[in-house]
Image 1 (cartoon, rainbow, N blue to C red):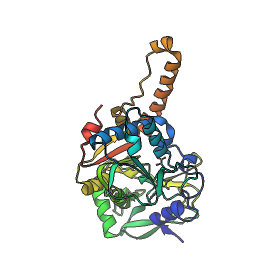
Image 2: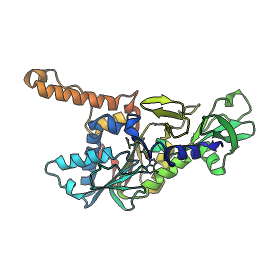
Image 3: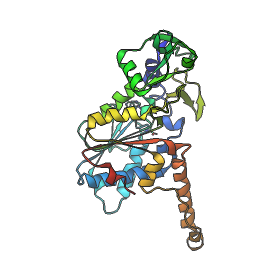
Length: 342
Ligand SMILES: C[S@@+](CC[C@H](N)C(=O)[O-])C[C@H]1O[C@@H](n2cnc3c(N)ncnc32)[C@H](O)[C@@H]1O
């Protein structure tokens, strides 16, 4: 039976035997920043250290990762804290992975594993490539107004469904203004991915932060530059595939970052900052610059290490790839400027 995309995605990704709750986990199917390079965790750790100081070295300092995959980022951050000389952070860390997938058997016991973000967080809440997997509806213009697209979960075939609810229509008018619907050629091919559920998801986790910051990292777009035909797609085994919501592949769509940001800001009562990953990593000291050639003569091993580190950062900062992802920094009771100063 055809379903609204939001329901089809929800079932395909998180239902019994859903794509994310069984199988190899995200790392088995696509490359996120968290998997691509340890330089990502190192940059986030620099932010953690600065935030820790700005918050006055609280005990505990919460590190909460929403959509934690298999816990890779939290494990890397905990290791960096253990290795940080002269810092008490490691002994004050409280680590929580928020995930719908089952807890990996080899996860360190210090990491709590839960399906709901805790309340009263003092510290950093991260959500890397989570929002693009929060289910959403697709709307298309028809001669009698905007309607939801329905999808057959087995074949991916689409048909036109009921009219949009008032709430979704309001979101669309505010965040995805288009020339459609008009019963003309202009409306043909236009698809709007309705991000209201993502706004609610993000503001819901921002509300769990009492003091500190929520950091969302994702691919996305801003009003005025939304892709007219939408971005919904699938991934399986490292390859892009048609987004058939049958549980055999990831189904993802870019995030309306400005809409999500505005929703978080309303809850936090503090202005958000939105920047590219490239800019963010530079601000956190990962600039991807090559080491000076002269180092090769004096310290060949050090030169090779620095070269490897530079190329790892280069993948994260490539503007045509991961570097084009957005960093949404939502402070709660702290100032972003000092934390992201170069
Ligand atoms: C694309 S993966 C990203 C994993 C990891 N953060 C990374 O960057 O590699 C998205 C993850 O979010 C999880 N997820 C989606 N919705 C969730 C929810 N409401 N609560 C907890 N986890 C969720 C999925 O199970 C999946 O593991």
